[in-house]
Image: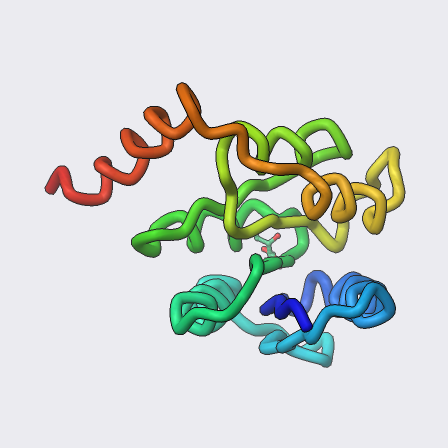
Length: 148
Ligand code: RB5
């Protein structure tokens, strides 16, 4: 069974439930590390929890959620090895995999999307990394981690 790790802050409790249920229905094992209440938590802690778990291995990808998706994606992209894409629609979700080989996808629980979030997630899941020139660019992204 493919595995996904998901974490959210208080800004995306409902969206976390929606996506967790959807993924389970799709046959995924979902490891939910996010909060389940509206009590305020800090999104960098959620990003750290999910990315740390992902890096243990065995996960197909990870999902991070906060009010906008911005805070969790900024945080996750500070973690070595993580490429977290804050996607807006099925097009950007698909391209996040095809060109950027993203291993995390981020959404905002307070964002109004023009497409169903499940469809956006599907576009990411169904896409395949194209390699070739995109691999060269990914290598350059990852090399940025060793610059300092
Ligand atoms: C929390 O209020 C909010 O700032 C957070 O969920 C997120 O939107 C940050 O980027």
